[in-house]
Length: 160
Image 1 (spheres, one colour):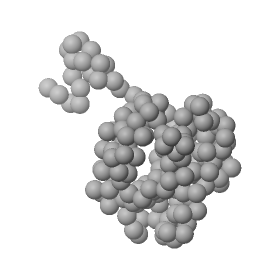
Image 2 (image 1 turned 30 degrees about the vertical axis):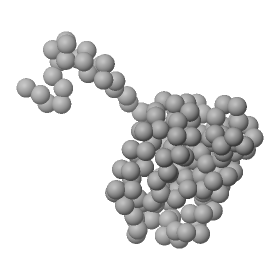
Image 3 (image 1 turned 120 degrees about the vertical axis):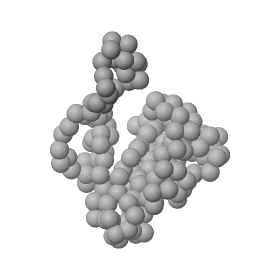
């Protein structure tokens, strides 16, 4: 099990590529998120479970607000399909949580958002002590929808 502080190196990001595709993003997009957080003063803690062949089996990361904000954001936990139901997500998330308690005693709250259909991660979060505080809806707008709106002559964002 590898623990990574801050921005992962290029080799680790390359190993994250298959996992990031599973999530509908890319390793480059993950790197961009890491760099944006780092540039804003957030501390990123990442745990990665590697197979014997050094490919990613699972990973999780948490971003911690600059001190003294007192909160963090559990952003992502993912396990590759061939490695699920083995406790990897539980191990990674719990290890990160223990490390945060030890390294950052100023952190009083960790926030996370989860899809209500993902029962496994919801159960894991409850097991680790997370409690649902509110429910919401996520709204998505694709670039194609913007193009269609423009083609239909609709004005967006107060355009004249």
